[in-house]
Length: 313
Image 1 (cartoon, rainbow, N blue to C red):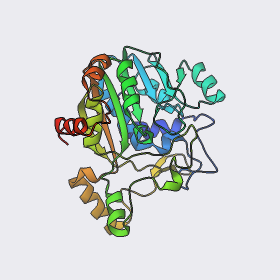
Image 2 (cartoon, helix red, strand yellow):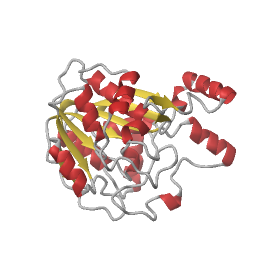
Image 3 (cartoon, rainbow, N blue to C red):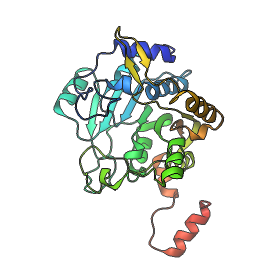
Image 4 (cartoon, rainbow, N blue to C red):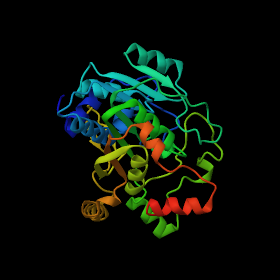
C-alpha cells in the first residue's frame, strides 16, 4: 500500500477526475457548490483511508464491501492508495442506470437492497450475496438508519472472522450541538421538515446522531469488538481549489482569530467535542451465534426490565 498523509490526498483531489454525477451545481449549499465529492469530504476520506491502511498493514486487503457506496469515489481512492486488485462490492439503494453502468465497467459489483427495514415505506431487504470479505466500509451511513441492527447483521454475515469494519459518523456530543443547545435551546435531532416524516425516497435523511458508547453497544450487539475509536473535525466543504488548481482551506482551522484559537484549544484538550468520529471494529462472533444469544424485542414489561438490568441500563 502507498502510505498516505493529508498532503497525498490533497494532491489526489487536485488530479481527481470526478464522475459526472458527483458535482451538484444547483442544490448544494455554497461550500459544496461546484466541488466534487473528494474535495468536499477531504478530511473524512483521509481519516477513512488511513484507518483502512492501519487495519491491514500486516494483512493483505483483497476484498471490500462499501455500504452506501454512492457516489463511487472511494473505489478510486482504494485503488490509488491500496491496490488495483481489490474486489469491490457496493451495497445501496436507488442506484441510477448511469451509476451502475459506469461502476460495473470499472470492475465493481453492485447490489441494490433495503438497508433499513424499519424505515417508513421501506423496500424489500435481501441477504447480501457476499461472504468472507476482508473489510467493510460504513462511511456516514449509520446516522441515516432508523435501526442499524439489520445492516450491521448483514455486515457481520459478509465479513470473514477477524474482518474489519471501518465506520464514520457524526458525533452527538459535538461542540456545535452543545453550543446550539446552550444558546438557543436547540437540538441535534434532524428538524421535522427535513426528516422522514415528509421525505420517503431512496435517499434517507438523518435519523439519529450517535455517541461513542451507543456505537460500541450496537457493534457488540451484532458480534463486533472495538479496535480503535477516534474523534476528529470533519471540516466538510472547507477546501477549495485556487486559481492555479491548488487545494486550500477556506476557513483555516477555526472561525476567526480569537474565537478560532479558543475553539482549537478546546477541541485539542476535549476531543469528544469534535464533530465527527471514526472507528475500526473487528468481527469476533458469527451472526448465527450472536443472533441466538442476544436479547430480542419483547412486549413483556418484566422481561424488558430484566434485559435492561442484564445490559447495565
